[in-house]
Length: 448
Image 1 (cartoon, rainbow, N blue to C red):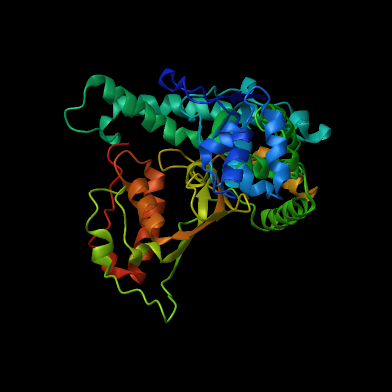
Image 2 (image 1 turned 45 degrees about the vertical axis):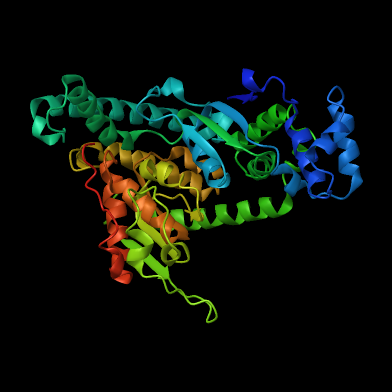
């Protein structure tokens, strides 16, 4: 695992502007909020040659809350190389205010060399040989199915949805994506990936604190590396980034829930699709919502258009019983509201082009190792999961954000399984908000 911090350098046109560290910026803006002097007058008192002394002097002036200061630091960029897909998923779950990107499964190495060691992720020593063997078999299944599906796409081109008059290079890319997106369910969740994230010092401190409070050795190692890097840019505020009792207790309780549900529901049989949607349009009696749904939605040119109060004030919760981790990794990155999953294997999804029976021995071996880890109460059970493992997943947000997600995930170029899941959720939404049907653009995910 490697962590790199990226410092933002002012462009040449800003050479005549004062250059401040993130913490000096935060402290100056905090002082600004408690003064009528104006920003220029405050900056005149700052010694840019000795910013630490200026920061200490400002912060001692009054009792500023560290959280409110941390939010003023601007975007601090961190790149995390060679972390597991599980840790990338967990960081996105925790860092709900961050902007970030993770390497696509289409572009990372798919073999056993691209895995952390068992010791790095807490696999018990006596189970390490089984885990290594299972990972190797999973990568072998992935590579075999990718090769087969790629050849199938060549032999039977009607299987691959290609836009009319597409150039040969586009046809090849779409055909390969057809194979990659269906073979990916054999990829281990332990596979190494890369993650880049930008957020304020306040949110970094919270993220690192929660990582440091998890029972997973990989998460705690990442917390230390991130903290060590951010201390260079925000040393005072990162003092608030260590493990904390409430975080540790909630992590322990969530693990206990996952272990209980995981043992009760562990299965390699595919779960049938089931979606749950709940819409709450209640408003206070002294501020009743009066905007028609059409007025909230019809003025948009596309999904990025601004929506009205009829959807912005509406609460929407939606959940699936069968979200494969392959899809969970991306749907988990929709930042608004809260997302929750026990991250278990209640079933195993494979697309219709892949035979379950052909891989049943592998899936049985994988489920047996997962069961053994769960029976020990080991947090490392997550590293025995493959991306085809199906888990319940819940997201609660507001109506405008749900509509955006539904239009995005069923729209042009969306993954076929995203489209199936969000289409089902959207139709559940329409049953409760039928007047939205006319104004919400459900797509067909063409082409893949």
